[in-house]
Image 1: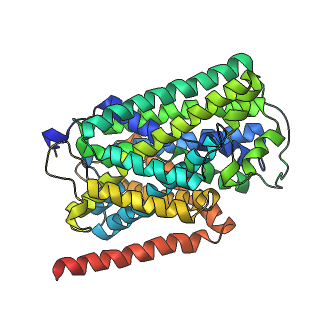
Image 2: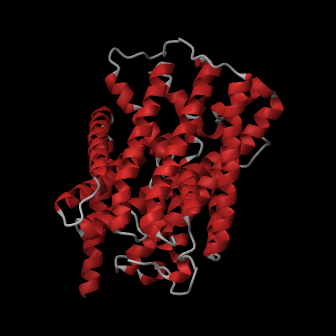
Amino acid sequence: MTTEAGRATLGLGSGIGLVVANMIGAGVFLSAGFMAQELTPPQILAAWALGSVLALCGAVAYGQLAMRVPRSGGEYRFLSDLLHPAVGFLAGWASLLIGFAAPVALNGIAIGAFLDTLFDAPDPRLTGTAVIALLTLFHAVRLDVSKWTQNALVLLKLVGIVGFVGVGLTLGSWTLPAWAPPEAPASLAWPFLRNQFWIAFAFSGWNAAIYAASEFRDPARDVPRAMWLGTLLVSVLYLAVNGVLLANLSPGQLATVLSSDTSRITLGHLVAEQLLGPVGAVAMSVFVIGALISATSAMTLVGPRVYAEMAADGFLPRVFAMPAADARPPVGSLLLQAAVAISLLLTHSVLQIVQNVSAVLMVFTGLAIVAMLRLVRSDDPPHPGAVVAGLVYLGVVALVLYVGFASSPHLIPWVGGVVAVGLAAYAWSRRRETA
């Protein structure tokens, strides 16, 4: 299937940029602090290595889906076309409530919180609401304008994070310390897997290119490459960043991320202050804020494409569909996502959402890979390497979800609630269509 020429404005570079921008946010500069409560430095790096392998396996497997369904919509489109429209609708519903709106809300809160390290900023929720509103308005203009600005933000983000790693390796320590976590568990397996929820949240976005596939000039070629190249690049950077953090911060410094949502500084801020002084700390805060704005911008760009596809298929009102005019974004869907994100921002805390978001995203990415595995017996079977990658992804995700559900019983009603409301919405949309 080919895309409409007027909308085919994205290439491989922009696709990699979307993946990188969606993935790199504040998570990588916060997660090690939470993980250090149960894991030693080598164990933390091993957990990040497992998360990297998991994301790369997902990207490889998704590449086969993108080659066969080169249209925007992500899991919604894959599951609708390859499993059942109801399953696809549930994935789209999850994207609206959780997949994009929740991370946008979290980034908005974080931007407001980190601004307070530079000056006496307003309430983080007010600042976050303003940022989401401004980015939504920006992306409501022509796609080609927002594309070039997004590419520039990604470039600045990469320069900043590579610079941070360079400073850490040049001026800081290279040796991992040997301290023990304050809550060292009797058995390693469960905390090791339970902490994958933090890592999965930091890696969420490895599949970002699929949500805007129709806007690539050659989606069947460039979307798969963008996913695994972008994921590989971010995996290397994440391991390097965590190595710098663990080698240069004490357990007490790592524990500073456990403070309240509205007074949090990142571990990167602490390292920069330690190695470069107050000016370095300020520069690091500016970088993190820029990285968060870039991630929020990327999710504001790609998320509404899912709802536009749902509207095109009749599951949402036509006002949310992609306009027929060339290079025009789906303004209705942009406003819809902003409204949901701002609602979450005003009613939820950061820690309250992370595990719930990761669990729901794991469920639907796993279902998408099940759809890919069903193609093994088709006339156009997926590459054997992608099948192996998909099986690895499913096995690890199933294990992580089992540990998560057993450790945090609230996840079951959370996921069940999303599914129940989604099925009710699907039934309503079907009745409305046949009425």
